[in-house]
Image 1 (cartoon, rainbow, N blue to C red):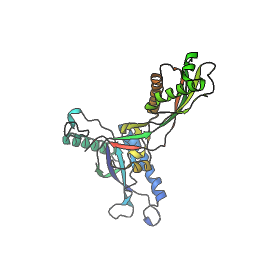
Image 2: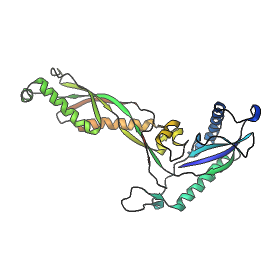
Image 3: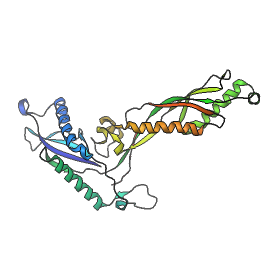
Length: 287
């Protein structure tokens, strides 16, 4: 749940009492950000300086400034609080009274927690939404299968080369529908002495992570209607444990979908990286 919090903070005095330059402003705001995080993170809030709004003077005072921060906390509504506009409609809304109640609770939590540490000049819920961040993740690895060819198999295919090529094509056709790309195949010149054949694979799935699974300023330092480019400009990441779960899934997909005549004896597919940027963003809650 995204909310915009604007707090008043008395800036440190500089020569001439002018607004800090960008470098000093960033350093100072990061320091304040760390203090707010220490206070609010125990309550599962994430905090980030709102670079888009930026610091501005408070009532034309030379040494007092408004420093905007964004706070986010995920809240799961009960089924009775959800409104489906019409049958078959994919979007939904939260009942107004339930939404207002949660906003009031969050606002009070923030005020009570920050107490006298900062002066809250304004507390605004600019948007309430749940978002899903989609990443393209890269995996690569290899797997080894065992396939014994009889003389009849070789003869029916028209020779060793054609028999091997037919078998390799069968492997590719079986796993490509699941998103795998075969990057290397064994030699087609002759059969393997131990009847084992090694294939290289690459996999680049698009995986969606809910707001509670992602981290970084990109999901909190800008408003909930921000574009993918704006989110990536601030930075965003996801939990590594989810990558490990996907890794295990890929190995099981291989094991279950190879052709019947290919016995899997080894596979190792590992996460190798990602662009460190969200590929797409979906709004799951319409308010």
